[in-house]
Image 1: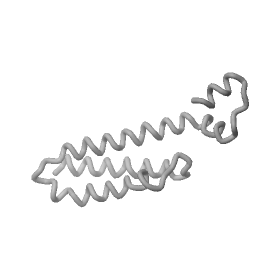
Image 2 (image 1 turned 45 degrees about the vertical axis):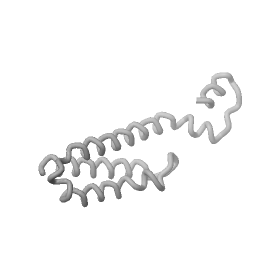
Image 3 (image 1 turned 60 degrees about the vertical axis):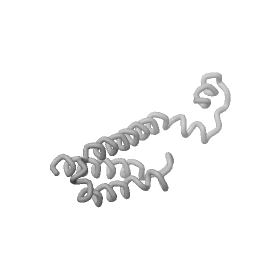
Image 4 (image 1 turned 90 degrees about the vertical axis):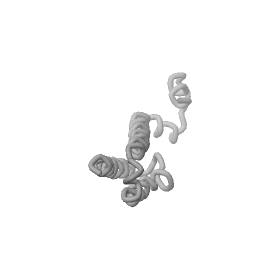
Length: 102
């Protein structure tokens, strides 16, 4: 936000800030996709009935394993964030199907 203000005022903006400024939409899209993934995981977990929770636990553990890089190693400048999001979305679809069909 500060970089936008500096740019509007005609002041010099540091190169690193310009790089972030030019990628603003990309970062916002990543943020929305990641927020959706977490809320989808919560929705799916809430849909599990207690009688099936034990047999579904390994599948939830696997999904948590898929989410882990987003909590530990990925940053906004990571080159593989697109593939991470695709991988997580795919895992969530499979988990949702499994929970729905069990």
